[in-house]
Image 1 (tube, rainbow, N blue to C red):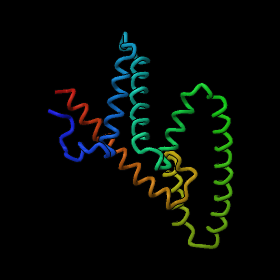
Image 2 (cartoon, rainbow, N blue to C red):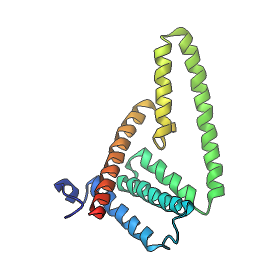
Image 3 (cartoon, rainbow, N blue to C red):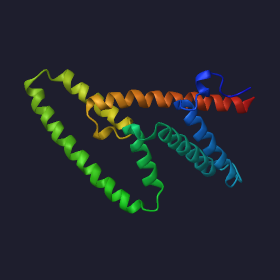
Length: 174
């Protein structure tokens, strides 16, 4: 029995197929590495991290560079695991400080608007949008329209990721 039963899954250009191919390749590579000698919590956590990074990287590569969240996720993964971590963290801190400054300016502008406009509903909406910006990779730099579109696509991709991982787990549990 194949782990993929749906005819859409057989389409090599579908998101699900691209993710599955890349993720299975990454899992094979992880399994080919040094086997876990014990079931210590540290080694289990390292294996968990490798699988999570493989899943994230596979999904971001499957989407290619068409989406802001995938570019942000790939950039984050590259900068986290590259040898040039010191230079990328400097760039990250510059980017972070720019984002913080723009948020502070936006917050002071919102406070002025709160006093003159509808107030509470608008502030609550801005708070929710800021929470969403923290969840979507690269969301800090997006305007609201792009943020909502990227969020919808990111949720679709996460759903696909969960479906594929469930099918793989089910297949190997048989």
